[in-house]
Image 1 (spheres, rainbow, N blue to C red):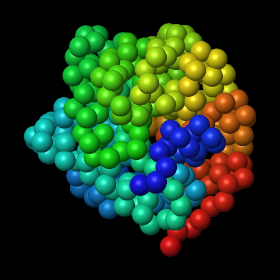
Image 2 (cartoon, one colour):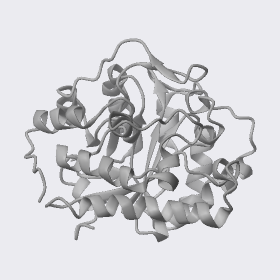
Image 3 (tube, rainbow, N blue to C red):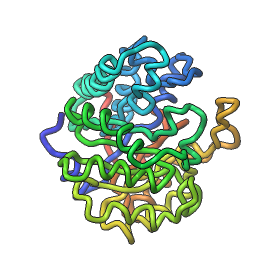
Length: 305
């Protein structure tokens, strides 16, 4: 854990996030084709998770996002795990990232991933939203993981790939008044959330919530980032977070990415110039691309001890 709080650092300069955890795991030969995705390895091969985090740290990332994105009580219950065991896996996700951070010099931080309700459904709903679930149920879904990741010592919570303002508002009701630093990032297409709300409306919901240290987008097309950053900077009054995917579209039925890759590390210079202070990559953005992003921002890369 760094002696400096991540929100304080972000107030001074841009910080580099990691890329897609699943991308690094698949590159290492792991099959992530089931509905638990990368979260399954918290149970079956935790050292693989640590190694994936380390690959990003060695590429120059300063923040690791934990393997808890798709780690939910409901998802693991379908595999016969009780809620208490799932809570233990949430804690493990923070510990594994922290262990990887200890293997490289310099300040490093851990972001506890809080994926959307749609990730638990494992049907691509995080790119649609509008689940038909009451707001109170969404609050109860998110509350246990948020509480455990915070207790486990995550430096910040990454509430990420949120497709819908309704879900964002539910999460904000859980974190408001808790004192736990959070960034909120939406899945988006163009200047709208995946559920179709204008990003200006979506970003505005963080105003007045002291726990939110940054707001922006992730797992979107890289071409959509510049405008999203500009909108977030204008309406939210917070630092901006941006970590797009490789530029292809997720086919939930085939469980594969389709189309042409479009992630160009040099674009990060424009994101930072536009006001982004947390920048990185998401699905299909691996350690080499993060190293390129670090180089584009003229940051030193240390290979570790």
